[in-house]
Amino acid sequence: MIQLYTGNGKGKTTAAWGQALRGIGRGLRVAVVRFLKPDPSGETIAARALEPQILVFGKSSPFDPALNQRENLVLKSESRQNFKEAVALIQSGEFDMV
Image (tube, rainbow, N blue to C red; front, side):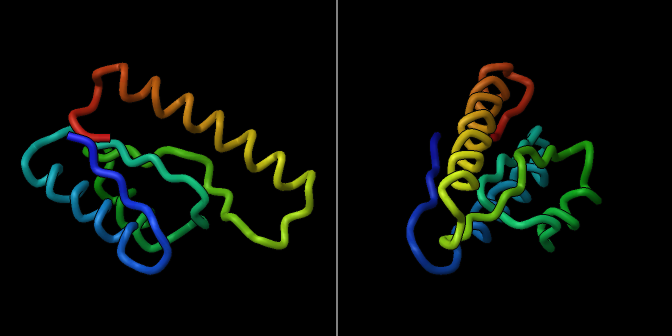
């Protein structure tokens, strides 16, 4: 099953973390891959208390519309690398839910 949370407004992060917590509650091995989120956030602080049942992964570079061209290119490069690492994490079979 693939669930993708997109769009403007609230609820995407809450929905994803809710699914992760439900998975942990059912004994699943869970990894959360984050993109473009500030750190530390309340959810990542709480998730650290659940390690090793949950792995929080991804460089936490928040998007800012005021980024200059160079900063934007760096952020895109970091996001691409995070995506490649996330794909490898999924393909590893180490986790039941990513």
